Image (cartoon, rainbow, N blue to C red; front, side, top):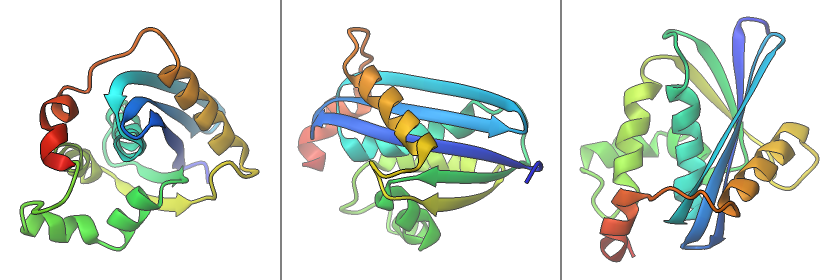
Length: 157
């Protein structure tokens, strides 16, 4: 397992839409890093997907073998069942979060990535930690603007 970068992610939204946040834990051998951030208006699915994107984008090397563990069926099923690739062919017609999916696909191709789903709010310690990071970020006073969402929320509703 030493050759596999373990990434754990979670997203949170206080209301849907509402204030939101993401939490990330990266583990490579004995190195551990945590990342989080919050947004003033977003959705849970956007934060779940953004957590995965930012985790991958934070990496300084390409060609890694990565295992991403998340409680988001939205993210796991969209990739593992290849739905997102069909959405690309249909130019995301009637699909939400096009901006984030296109951003995800840019970084996804740089690595060998597999996804593992875990039940949220269960007994998985890293998922619990990611949830703590995400909710704390959503509750913070230092919130970012999810510009694409705020400009397009009425179209995506």
